[in-house]
Amino acid sequence: MPAPRRYAFGRVDEATHPDSIRATLAEFISTLIFVFAGEGSSLALDKIYKDAGSSAGELIVSSLAHAFSLFAAISASINVSGGHVNPAVTFGALLGGRISVLRALYYWVAQLLGAIVASLLLRLCTNGMRPDAFHVSYGVGEAHGLVLEIVLTFGLMYTVYATAIDPKRGSLGTIAPLAIALIVGANILVGGPFDGASMNPARAFGPALVGWRWDNHWIYWLGPFLGAGLAGLIYEYMVIPTETPVTHQPLAPEDY
Image (cartoon, rainbow, N blue to C red; front, side, top):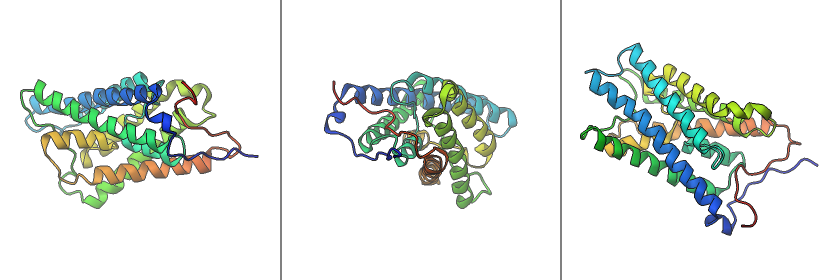
């Protein structure tokens, strides 16, 4: 009989299990690393150029900064927490039954706090420069920005599933951090000029809170969650064979 997919709120001991604490800490630190470098590159361009983000070269710099830092952040945490570094990725894994609700809540708190701390550190290190925040570009409607975030995050989550979650990924799992970082970098080259290409609610929230810039902010929550959720469900129920045993990735052991 095919193994049923497991959806669970989480065991009582999981809330305080050392594995849960370590995984939560890993998500906090990795998200901090990613947002610090990604947002920092935007502030650096603001410092260098009066009208940052207006040239192809600056777009490439931003894309590379996000790709490099995400590759490092995922590599640093994938063996501990799964290397989500993104509330939308955690949501997609949750819908696919790959993580418990309790663990997802831990991850979301850690990811948001990591982004906030990274943005605060940037404001301190840059002598008070306000972090940039994502918003749709002039001439781009909110509906277009929403659809773009859905599509971009769908591609990201699908890549995460194929390289890091699929039980039959085999040796492909070794390049998961690189593959995920590359799709994020490529998506920024596509969506950056239109809406900034966030694909990550934590990446959008930290700078928005610290810089107090909230224009079009809802797009960067709804779009990524819809895109990641759709990709997670499609890959889980249409791509992974039903006879493949499914377990939470990762979950705390049954005993200490």
